[in-house]
Every structure is written in C-alpha cells, then in structure tokens.
Image (cartoon, rainbow, N blue to C red):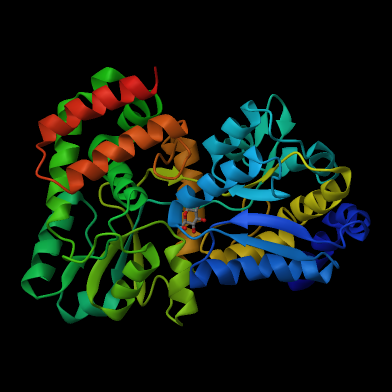
Length: 417
Ligand code: BGC
C-alpha cells in the first residue's frame, strides 16, 4: 500500500510542484484546529507542504465548531486582507461564494480529476455556480456516542442503541457516582446533541423536513416536543461544571473514566489515539442513540479566497496537496475522519473509521445521509444561529418543551425571512 500511495501522491502533486516555486512566503491558513488531536492532524499538512518547499503561516483561532474563527475571518475579509485559505464548513463556503469573496480552484480540480473522486454530497458544497471554490479535506460523522469500555465492563453495563436505553444506562452510571455524559456547555456542543436527538427521535426524513426544509409542521410537531423532552432528560446527566467546557476536556473526562459517555463527532478520536488509547477497544464507538442506519455528515473545506497572483500559486499548491490520495489517508488517520475521496482505502483505519466508511455507504444507498445543522452543513448561518439560541436557552433554563417548540418556530421564521 505504501509504495502505491506514494506513486499516486507524487502524480497528483505534480501540478503543485511548479506552483510551489512561487510560494516562498508560504501559505497562510486560518483554522480552528487547536486541540491536541487537531493540531497533530494539521501537522501532517504542514509537513507535507514543507516537503514541497512550501512554508506555513499559521492563523489559529481556538473554538470548536469554528464560531470564533468565522468572526476573525469576517474581520480579515472586511479589511481587504483575506488569508490564502480558511477552514470553513459547507454552508459558510456557499455564503462566502455568494458574497463574491472566493476565487476558484478549477485548474487544480481539472488537473487532478476531482470530479471523478469527490463524493457528490461534498462536491455540491465545494462548488458554486459550477466553480470549485474550496477543497474538501475529510468527512466527519457527528452522530457518535463514545463509551469508556472499562467503566462499562466493570459495572456490567451495555452500550445503548436507543434513547430509552441511553436514559436507563445513564441513570445507572449516575447511581454509581459516575458522570453519565461528558459535555461542554457551548452552543455548538448543545446543538451537536440536539442534532442527534432530532435524528434519533424522528429519523432521517423528519430531520430533513425539520432541519433542512424548515417545514413548519415538522418544527411544531409532537416529535419536536419529544425531542426537547429528551434534551431536558440529557441535561440531568451532565456534571455541574459543564458550562463553557471545551469539547476536548469533555473527551478527557471520558478517557479518565470520570464520565461514562460522550456524544461527539469523530474528531474525538484524534484525542483518543493521541492519548495512546484504541478507538473501538478502550473507547467504544456506537452510532448516537436511535440513529443506527442514519449518517449525519460534515466535511471541512479550505476555501479559496480571492488573493493576488503570487498567493494564488501557494493556494493552488495547498489545494492539490490536500486532495492527494496519500495525504488523504495520512491526515484522516490522525484527524479521526475518513477520506474525502471515494478511491482511498480505509483498510489501515481503526474499527470506528472502518465502520464510519461502511455506514456512510449504507446511508447513501438508503437515502439516510443528512448534513449536520450543528456543523454548518444544513442551514444558513442566520438560521443555524437562531436554532442554536433556542436549544441553548432551553438546555440552560427550565423552559418547557412546548415553549421551546414555539420559540423554535418563531426563531426560524424570523431568521429565514
Ligand atoms: C470540525 C472538526 C473539528 C470540530 C471541533 C468541527 O466543526 O468539522 O474538524 O475538529 O469542529 O473543533
């Protein structure tokens, strides 16, 4: 595998090689990959570029989900000084393209035949009016439940597959004096759980109706009331210091056995492997309760902002490197995600990565693949923020489920007006 990987890799960066000569200054990249596992993955990219003689100008903005990074990016673009590339989630990429702030990567895409190897769901968000405006880096799955295997084995507990089972096992953990759910009270983390509950309680069609299509009937339905009931139940399973905690610190609680479970995307695997634990063995991965068979997806993209001719060369070199098959394998092994190409084997990936790839395929076939609201793959930023506000307010107050549903409908209506 290693030699063929290298051959493919060399072929696909041939385009980048000429560009790299012009990029002595390096490529400036704005991103939010600042946790230990994320930084390790980013290092794979930095080293890859260094191998081609391309320097790296780091522009990290801490904050999972990328909210803080988005604010910094807006300021940079407004001042007429965008970075060469910026990490973005799908809907933001579309919004920046609509603003006219993005150039295109068509030449790199054509030279490396992206059209044949990038999955359609990713291409749809990476292209705008037929132009490649960003390059997809990976595919993450946010609907995972991570479980401390030792805690579960020692106490004879069974990994839950439904929300009812989750509630039962969480209550058992609580009785044992173990925090059932490691969680950080930040809007995007609350929304990550909300995504799981909507998908789990309603199924993929309901998720699509409510979250993608903003169908008033779905948003105001009894199912949505039940979703908020379940959110209230979950609120009872987090520790009292959850407020504001970063996601990777919650993952640390899970790894230490201070908590039994965590609902989080598979970037958690970056922390797990970096701590020397094996995903699928020390920390088990099962689809978030009641979401088996469905797949929430997100992809990180690097957007190609309008830059000078000089900077364009580095930007193109970066883009070509990112989608090269060898890099796709090396990077995603560390990041916890799976490749953004259909032709890269996941044979070397851990059990959770292999399951992610198999489940993705199944979800594509069964039409149960849906983009995540929490991670910018379902709605405009205005609607996303409006829903975050309701979810977080409900989670941190004694608001009833009926009131939350009403607030949700009002918020969505005014944000999408
Ligand atoms: C990104 C991941 C990142 C996570 C936590 C998500 O929105 O897609 O790449 O690891 O946020 O920062």
